[in-house]
Figure 1 (cartoon, protein in one colour):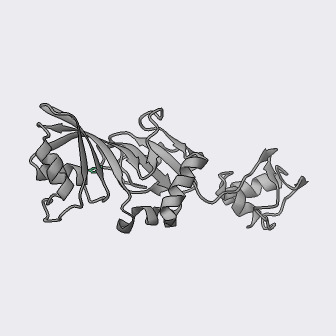
Figure 2 (cartoon, rainbow, N blue to C red):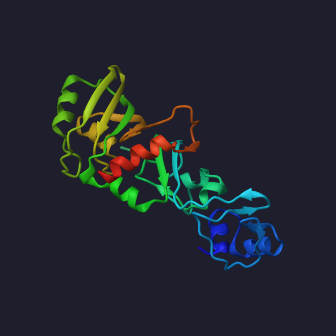
Figure 3 (tube, rainbow, N blue to C red):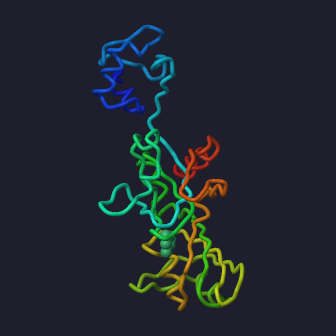
Length: 239
Ligand code: URA
């Protein structure tokens, strides 16, 4: 890979800014000052530094976000704030995108990555990746609802959902539940409750496949996946 591309990709500036860094003698390759932008770098062998800071090449990024309500799960929008706006430059320059969507008012686990293949695999309906949600539901959630969800319910457009596993945490005027589903239809959790005559008033995603929301991440915050989490994700994506 060209030296200027490596530096630009790793967030050291635009191609033009990177050229200036090189001119300034800020960049060294294997301890020798490198001034030419087109020098070829072997990303597995060569040691590149910029003002003494090691430049470590990587192609992919994987972020776990605790999405806050009020932001869109999209990469850009003309009017509204998106989850990408919550990222620092250091992470944004990798061009990550949300792997699956949460509604604007939904909170919780959101994976962001620039690995299109992994995202495609995780989202493939063939994979049946379970997603667990916690919700507040207006109205008393009952054993009948558990039964109905376990058989699959019919959504407003006639779609028959796959079975969902409903757990009642509190059955009251406002009930608290956990629901695990393996699909990701538009507004699916809200529409499944509508199918049994109830309304979701708060929704938070707790997990996706083997990954669980790290509750220490503040709302609207994020962190990179740990090596163990990434391994779990790669295992199911490759299955
Ligand atoms: N189901 C919904 O209704 N909304 C979400 O954001 C996710 C699942």
